[in-house]
Image 1 (tube, rainbow, N blue to C red):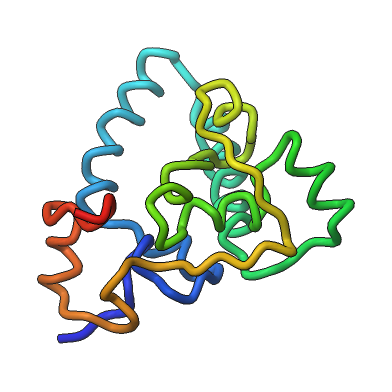
Image 2: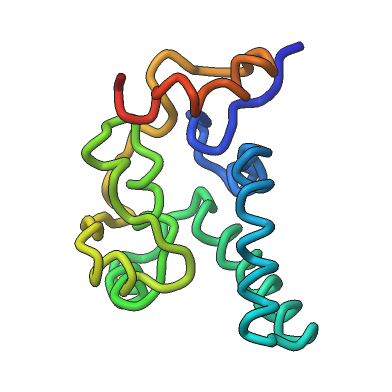
Amino acid sequence: MAVPPGHHSDPDYTVTTALRFHPGELLLALPLRLLAVAVLGVPIAGVIVFEVIFAFANFFEHGNIDLPLKTEKTMGRFFITPAVHRRHHSRESELLDSNYGTIFSFWDRWFGSYGESGSGVQVDTGLPGIDGAIGVMRILALPARGVFRGR
């Protein structure tokens, strides 16, 4: 059975890209997130507020929109914009290895993974050799096959 491309294999960078994370990533992240909530003693209301903000930011950064250049430049100093994060979804591994952040761009700046991008910059997204729907087993095996670094 063919399914839409996954998060990074999607050649059409749209808001739906934000929904297509690998189930293995979600399963590995959940225990760490729960542990952080327990250790920090975050109240349920705090978790809900965080999740709503995170979801909004995730949809925004994966939106196929171009902001006015002045707005893009100003926002990009502090926040992850669609153009800033689109670079992270590039087919080119040099660009793929940048702009990992969600919500704030300072993390990438601090860790040296920030790369300039803007609404006027065209980025070819997706993974080489995957240009549409693929089989479920193939898409689940992509992380194990090392396709993210051109291997």
